[in-house]
Length: 438
View (cartoon, helix red, strand yellow):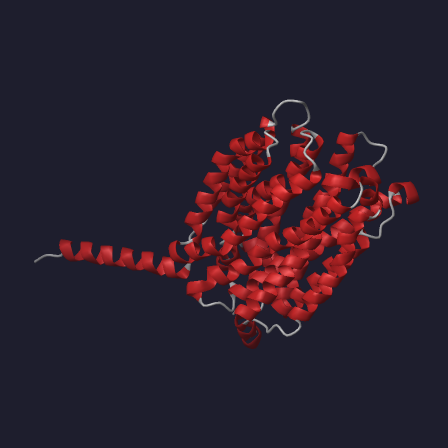
């Protein structure tokens, strides 16, 4: 399990590195380089618009790779998605600026960002099922949390490199070529990930499906036809996690550097400290999910996000590094209380024959609802000299919607479900015995 979980974590970290390095570049340099005729605000919005394209591509990627995973196995998904995302990320670092090739530059940027999102859309489902379908049920949440640590590791890799370059290069050097280096580094990371995953075994549940001939012929059609309500609920439930994460890691970076005068190196350091602590908290929260159930933690995380969004904005507004880090960390701890357990929760909601498609599409639908628009909406709402309370309202509203969706979903932890079922059965038997005639 440790070897499988480590391979899953490594690949997920590399793919999220590819995805996050673009978000950081969009917040810092892509606007002026690829949209120079726009005003500073419009250029930032346009850069975040290309950022959002990756989220729109993720459900499409999850549908295609989910079909492969449900028809041909989880292993091909792990290799194909990693290769596609890595190649697209390296290519982003090679795109000339608007000054060199004109309008072709932002067009190429959008196409490559789409391919990044397409590949990442397939990665999560394959990586999570690799651990979830191998893990013993009493520790399924713990082992399935390894891929959920991948975003934190990928973010730290991407922004650690960005932070190093930002701190050692002049502004002119960083804008000219420094921002491209993390994209080129993605090629080496992708090769390392492919090497780690080369010997990964197929999951026992898929092998059983293949041997009995019970694989779904059209997994996406079956999910949409028979489980559309579950798909919408999971997408809505996960929206807040994406919204909070990208408000913290992408919007706050642009807002602090452009509106508050915080140096990008300082702000990147604050964000990285909060993300590192969030990553460390992930397995501990997952263990609680194995003991007490997935749904209670998801409800608690949503409630924390509802209560913390206004303090988050207020602390960010101070421009004090310690207070900003506190605000960022509080938001991410609320988010990770949910996302630490969804690696086990989503696969348990879907039958094995459609699990790769259902879990991946539901997860990435949440990305469209919560992640694609959040940097754009927050940047537009924060325009002006006053505190960006409208951003807090926006995030609180999304958290409330997600809380409602989680409330409508069932508990899936098999250990907790059996305990509750047994308690109900004992209670009913006791009542029947008391009512029986003497």
